[in-house]
Image 1: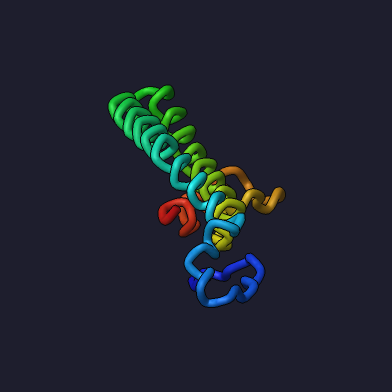
Image 2 (image 1 turned 45 degrees about the vertical axis):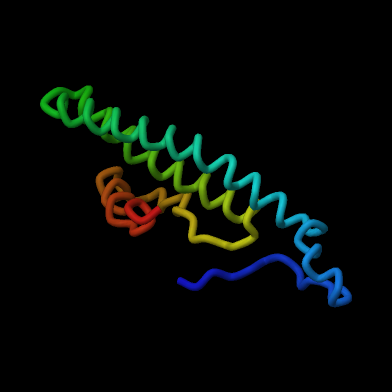
Length: 124
């Protein structure tokens, strides 16, 4: 999927001041903010997903393990949604977000199948 820029075109400055153009752009500072937020959020995602995955995998033979793995999948989708939202607002490029709703008349087993087979569950 190609990235679609959503920010407006830049104004043209005289050639001698062209190197200062990024300092006057709002997108420069929002992208720096995105970089500063990405590192701690990435560490938090990694720690949470590895911990929940190991705990859920070890306890899979109990109901608690299954519940932890369900929370893991839903948490990963929430993290992907948050990352797409941050990317859109701070970087200015639209990303595919995980679907937030599913058909309500479908049984819960089919809804779980839709969530697990959706590419955004595994690619975000």
